[in-house]
Length: 139
Image 1 (cartoon, rainbow, N blue to C red):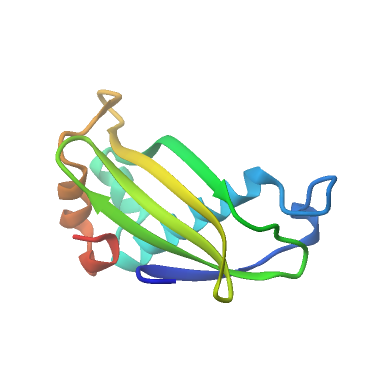
Image 2: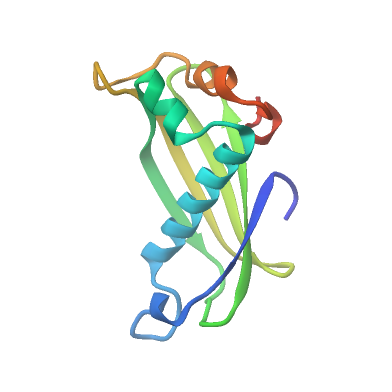
């Protein structure tokens, strides 16, 4: 993996589909787990977000598959946040088995104001205000 925060995961037998490889929904679970671990490592915890009355939300998520994963495989996922102008941000993630690229996940997210049920204008500012290691989330 080129850069970013990384977490290793072992593929479990119950995550397989009828063809014997990892079910597509499981890739999304892996990716979400790694995003939360990255936020936590940066100092951005769920409790602190709730105290602010906000929560990160998924707007869109896509997977591009390159190789199959099977039970017992060990993979690493990275997590690279990309910030621009406006209410959304992107998180690019790669799933790798050693040096081999298995899949890519692209997440488009925002930060939801739980009171107004609207996206906050500057999600990076929310994360920056809580982070003790903002570099982990690209800030």
